[in-house]
Length: 454
Ligand code: PMP
Image: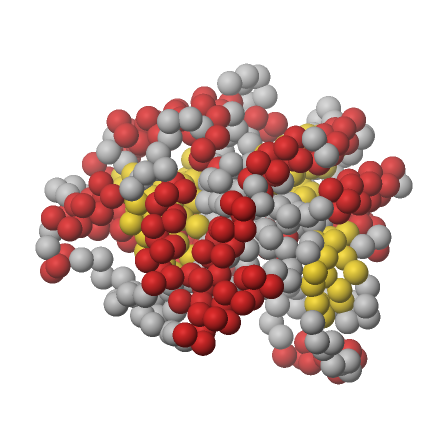
């Protein structure tokens, strides 16, 4: 690899502070921006040459880590051959990728490509509404999602997102989005004495559909495991129950696999942990290209697509994305999936997520740790001040833990709920191709920091 020119880091830092509007940043930065210079595998290097293990895979997308030459070449070759082509027409990488996605989903699906997870979900909402409208049920327009869910930043996807602080400044959102409590056994929304929280949570969806009138509900959208809302991991029969409820009411089931897709949870798709569930629509992004290029995908079961076909061309889906399904992004996705399969990444995540990484579960004995929840390479450590009362830990302590990890060369994240005090879940989600040595470093560093935190 050619050495990048040495940059004037002070100038870059000043320009960053003056001109770059960061995602989720506060106006007063206080301190230096973290500017990455290069990356290799699970690690990146900042401008000063300090190396960090990226324990959250960027924004949970860098599944195969940095610097995969094969992926870079796939993009370059594709750009040289055909730099751009719209999917109002067609091109080879999109065709092959749509066929591959259908194969991976284990049934016949048609895929619409976009550029991001938010767009993939927006596309799903439009398809669901039009499907019902053209299928003799024009009143079915509402969507149900769960509190604490995150489904994206655009107004429709944000309306499905149900974390107050992410929304309040942008309300009112899109009409027709309803929310139910999540299957969050640790703080069961239906009361501490409830022992079958997941079942009660699933039944709430049934109840809401009945109360709203099934003839008004288009779809339920959910992640198999809530990621951005604090890693909430229900038992596998929760999703099975939700799928049955949807079927009973002719409500489509949209599964958001933006984070959990392509191996993150130890199966190719997160819904596959729940036997017998075959979603109507599956949305994807992030791990689809391991973050090398932007790409979103909305895979729609053929039985839904057939209903569009029956309507003739005048009733086609009125939806287009200039860059969606860009040839280079599709070529990158195909190469990414080829590597995931060739290197047995999914089985590896299942094995190491249950062995090496699961050492993190021992932290449940630490006085600050209320619960450790996990699936594959997706870990959430819920921090509390008091294990009995489950009062969330005060803010500076979480910040200190993250800062101490960073000091030692490990990046971890935090999320949870956006209501004050409840952003108290530490997030660990390393690249799926992290070496065993990398994972050992990650676990050791977190243990050292916890031992050091009183
Ligand atoms: N769905 C889920 C579950 C996500 O976590 C995210 C992003 N973190 C999105 C959708 C939106 O994806 P994007 O940022 O690519 O629009």
